[in-house]
Length: 279
Ligand code: FE
Ligand code: FE
Ligand code: ZN
Image (tube, rainbow, N blue to C red; front, side, top):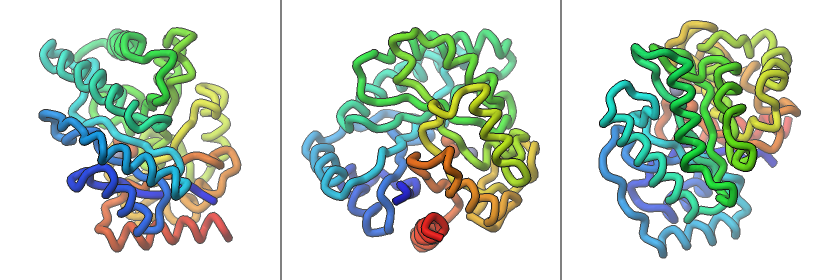
């Protein structure tokens, strides 16, 4: 059975997300580790977190894919913003250990007016500082659309970061493959999914591909726009997304919907993906 779910709001707490996910037909989900626009993180209520952990076990959930706030830029050109981002990364990664064995996904960063290579080095430094070899959380760098100065728009950039993680910490880092982002970045998953996945395998290694963000895109391949669309209503289209869901190289990964939907829309897409997978 496929692990599928969508992005959920943490506003009613942790256990509520588990119940909501199950009610929607899912068995994995994503949530922001704090307000996506930045700001103070709430300290999780330990009994609420324990209730979610028990619920996930009881209902055989797949791994969750928590998302760091979009504002967290580990390679900002402003010292204050960089320090905040680092603090956020440290705190939220530590918080994830209360939900053992899941994923903590983040956007690698924006280089702004700085040298991209120096920015990647900066990201590597943060990862090497805060990843512990004995942690249960695996940190995921998201494949990016290449909007503005985003780092991570090519598989090579992701590899360049992962390669410089200290050997004893390497298995605690991987990649989250976002279908809208890779398409917008110029990887043609519509006409050559096999080719794109082989290229990923040659560059980064498919064993590093831990999770999938399943989104259609409002724009064409290589547009660098990063505007998500509902499954089957964008430029990637239903047939290609169906092939992604069923591709043997991606089997066993959690698939997370980040499509512009209300609750009913997500319920329909979750059912749709499960039907594709069975067909
Ligand atoms: Fe993301
Ligand atoms: Fe994404
Ligand atoms: Zn996006």
